[in-house]
Image (cartoon, rainbow, N blue to C red; front, side, top):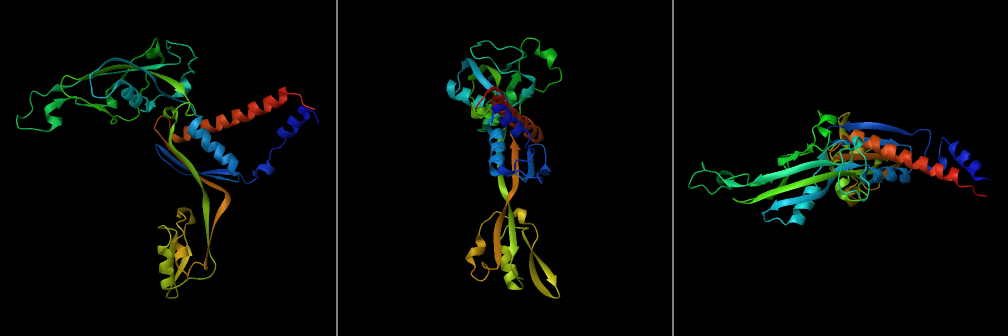
Length: 322
C-alpha cells in the first residue's frame, strides 16, 4: 500500500476503535469558576487523556519574565535570586496577542515583548511612635509586593492595548523585604513561551485526572453495619435511608470517593462491596494560575492537540513509502 493510500485510510477513520475512542465520546462540564474547572471526558483511552493533560502542563503558551536588568539592588536578596523570584510571578497578559521571540534577538519589540519595571525604596516613617517595634509602623515600603510592578509600554503598545490590564495576576506576592536606605530598581522583559522550556511558562497550577469510581453493594447492608459502611467512605458517598424502620445503606455519589480502601479493614463488610473504576470515564481538574481562564486553557490545549494531529498526517502525506 502506498503512503497516500495509508494516509487516506487513516483520515477516513472517524472512530478510532483501536485507540479506545468510541461513539459515546462526550465532554461534561461539572464545575467552573474564575480559576478552576472540573469536567468529564467520557469514552476515550488513557493515552489520549494523558496527552491532553501533558499539553495543558507544558505546551499551552503564556507570557513570563525572561530577562531582568538590575540597575540597583541593595536588598539582602541576591540579583540572581531576585530574578528567579520575578520570573515565577504569573503575568496577566493574553499570549495570543503576541508572537514568539526569535532566537538571537537581543532587543524586544512591541509584538513579542512586554516590559515591566520594579522601582521601590524603603524609608523610615516619620510619624511612627517612638516606642513602636512593628516594622509596618516604623518603615515605609519595607515589603516589596508584586503590586509594585508596573507596565512600561514598548513602541506603540499603549495604542495597541489601550484597555489592557497588563500586570501580575496577584498583587500580594511578596518579593523581598527592605530596610531604610535599601532599594530595588529593575527592568523586566516578558516573552512568550511554553512550560516544556521552563516551568514559569506553565499556565496551570495543577492539571490532573482520575477515573470515575464505581461502587457496588453486593447485598443489602442494614443497621449498624450501614453506619459503619458510611464512615468507611468520604462524606457524601454513602447515605442512610430509613426503609420500614430499618437503616439501609445505598451509594449516593460514588464520584466523591477517594479510594481510601478503608472498607477492607472490616472483615464483615469487605466482601459485601465491590470497588472498581469506569475505565473510559476521566474526571479532569484544571486549576489556572490566573493568566487565562481555565476554559480558555482547555480550548487552547485542544487546538494544540489538533495541530499535532494535522502535522503528523501532513508528514505522512509528504513521505512516499512502499
